[in-house]
Picture (spheres, rainbow, N blue to C red):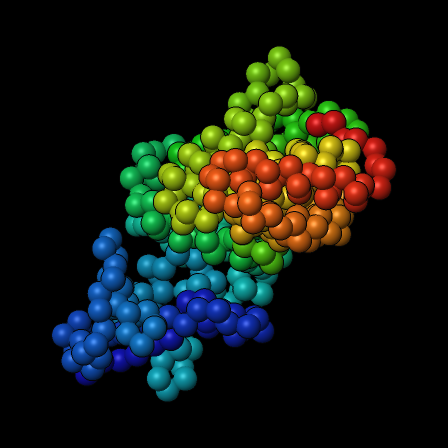
Length: 377
């Protein structure tokens, strides 16, 4: 007979008084009995045993008893289960660590059992920003980061954690914990040295590239695509010749290539890839929007609009520049969309596009932006 348990995050969130996001189940009694109870369940895990039925995930207990299963989990605060009778099972340290706000590995070998847990620790730090990562957990991360184990992970499993981070309350902690734990490489190699590179000259910056990136990510938290764009926008700075620091001339083009490489490495959806590249390429021009000529303003607004990224892009720009440019960007987009190409200029291929741009630039010239001091970064 199959025995059922609600496990992990849902139990933790309920005990913490947080809205639960996950509903995962474990079962005991063998796979055959499980399949007989849920004949429509399909196995989806490759490296781990996971079944999906009715939109819910099910895994067999790791071990013979709930207690053994809890010791095999990632973090103590996730090592929780409730059976069908409502009885709570908890790792010996789970409740104390929840009370004290500590993220601690459930066992010393937890990361070696499944190296993707490195990214889960960092993701949990982003989702539970008031929790600290236990020093011993960071030490285990450093040990694993020095091994080839992380490079062997399937991209899809790392990307799953990244997508969760993009929805977290404080996404910057993901990068900061990975940096402190020595685990940014190989998956986030572009940022491995970012904590030691100045983000830019005074008075506009007094922090590292990694700190600035995290700050911008937190400012746009709540919009997952904007958070990804924030992560990517300054990637080009990490390849600046140190002799040029704290300046980062031309980092936009280098950043576009780096954002493309990162999204491809993680096998993220094409929309994320496009968003990261656009953020890297255009954020500097957009930050100086009020000083741009009508033609350049048109190109910045139009590129973001055509890509379907107008709203997250301008959220990023506002967070990065510290200036609310959305009213002008919204107004200018409306001006551009109101322009209509005369019938006789349609259907001419590239020539039609050139003439449309010319009309749009003329229209924008009638709507100058209010004066503002330029920001050189």
